[in-house]
Image 1: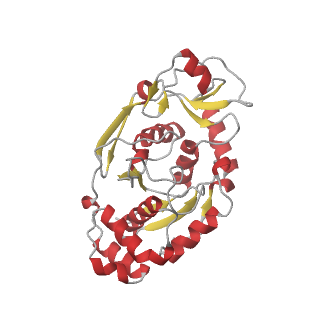
Image 2: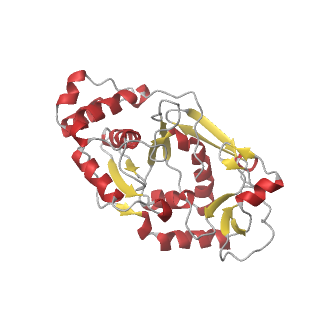
Image 3: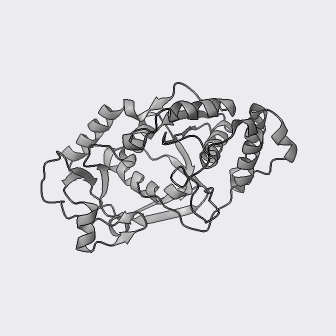
Length: 299
């Protein structure tokens, strides 16, 4: 069945190998079933945006042979849409303004979970103005959120106990990843999300938000991360090197190996588009390995 997938890099630096693996997995998963593949630049967190990074990422993807459908979308063009859905949630009583800071919560002795501080709902009944304050989504009534990941199988979290009420807009008025990505995937018609295993837990937050705002839930596939030698996630924050486009064949072959696809050695010597064509024709998501270590990222 054709599905619509996407790749959504953050322009906080140039494309690196970990991002290439995510792009390749989402591309092959969609194209192997004659599905659509969209490209979105996740630039809603403006303090993290590096000037010129978006253009650099697009240029590298083109040189690597990727072809996306339609125009590239930018979260920075959708701020009014995020505002609309946030206030819908506020009006329906799903959200509330919060005056707590991380430091004040630490002083209270609030404990940490896998996604950071487990917010205990201090401001739920304060009826604060939302001006210059963060906005949190109430998880008090959601219970256990469960889904079937295409790689990791059954996964569940009790959000109230393990995460607490989470932020949809920060006090500095920057919309959180959780709100932006859920709105984006709905309006873009994304029905299959392929991304790194560090976002596995976050998918439970997104499903609860989808339920609250009345969106459908896409299928999820979380792929193994590329790690540094010390076991930490390879990322821009941990000093990942930009990809070297003159080694495109080797990079694509190595990315396929990381995804368990077994490309022949000679594949590295052909053009990037020939490699992608081979990858689509031979794509088998059941061969993607599962990392035993539990990864998570606080967003």
